[in-house]
Amino acid sequence: MIELFGKLGELEKGFSEQREEIARLKRLKGRPDIKPSTPSGMDKATEPTKPAKKGKRRFRGKVTPRVKIEDKVVKAAVPEGSRFKGHEPFLVQDLVISATATCYLRERWETPDGRTILAPLPEGVDGHFGPELRRFVLMQYHQGQSTLPRLATFLRSVGVAISKRQLQRLLTDKQADFVAEAQDVLRAGLETSPFVSVDDTGARHAGKNGFCTQIGNDWFTWFGTRASKSRLNFLDLLRAGHTDYVLNDAAYSYMRKHALSAPLIASLMAEPETCFDDPKAWLAHLKRLGFTELDVTPDPVRIATEGALWGSVQSHKFLCDAVVLSDDAGQFNVGEHALCWVHAERLVHKLDTFSDRHRAAQTRVRGLIWDFYASLKAYRLKPSPRRADALRARFDRIFLRRTGFVTLDRLLKRLHANKAELLMALDRPETPLHTNGSENDIRCYVTRRKVSAGTRSDIGRDCRDAFLGLAKTCDKLGIAVWDYLGSRLKVAGHKLVQPLDQYVRARFRPA
Image (tube, rainbow, N blue to C red):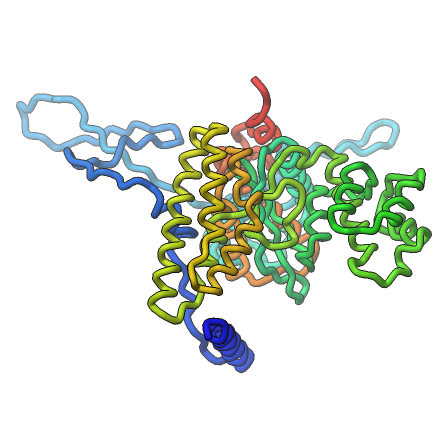
């Protein structure tokens, strides 16, 4: 009977999803999608209760402007005989927005040998729009999440003669240096970070649905939009721009782990060639060895290609001793893999119940999981082998228990099978227990998608991904995006900002 109730709940859920899809296709109004205000209630619920603060009410602290303060004396009309008692300061911050146009009269000279010499433009001037305007456009579009038409309207209203096409060119033309710097940030993060957190979301490009993958941690963020979200795609992104395929010990180990037959692995190991420059050379090698003619499960071409990609990742010293933290999406299960506790607990929370006994069992198990989660948080602050052994035994008691609720028992058994990945923090305390960081990072991409739909050209896609990732990285490193853009565009009087990958590497540089 319990199993029938479970199947009935699954059918009702399927019918509900079908009704929503039909309503969407008919362009009818569907149910409101109301999300929680915070990415996870587990952290909030497992934090100790903060005591109520008593005493004087706190007021806003001292305002310290980032610009030079200009003193201006305001005189008062006073009666004769009054005594001067000094000045009372009153700080006012303001903003001056105005357009300027400069016509550079460049000297032109002709040398005795017939050559023409033209005076160079000032540093930072690259095209008919100055560096301050370019900085403002990039800042407002990517970090301010403005739309191109609204940005064009604003610029015209303050006196700038610019079209939408010219504005689009400011966003995408001559931005190869920014795209390359974003790639360097990814490489620095993969080389030096003890862990990376990953996630993905839907994307729209060239009129087709795709996926944007986020890779990052507390010090950097990188986005990459592709047509697929398979493991092949994820491994390709982890190569950080490299295109080679490498057969090494890491590649062969991956192939064995994913059940590629021993004779096929032996045939790959017997060949002297172990590095291939591009997909064409790699597929030609597999075809020569007869991989493409096999019709077996698992697909030998796919497993061998994934292994060669992982070999390439390792050969470039990426993720050599780092943990990949994910929400249990299958494509992210590579290398040292850890799972998010928030997503694991959510499976128990969203489980359909059909009686008071089921609801009581669900509540009891959720309470045990939350208590265990709180203990893991405390362990990360003060790890020890003895406490790690105790937590592993406690994990078994929670997830091997029999509640009498068959569906819940099956779910607990499935979660227990992920014990090593859920308890990665016991061996690697620096690894977070959740993917809230990725959830927060990817929100800016979702906002951009809602504001401006998708991209059309590949350069437009790459620029959007690069600037969103660079802006997030600047925030994490404590660098103002305005200062970063000013340094890169050589705005007059700009602050010097080193390449961002140097700051990422410095976070893990040994003292």
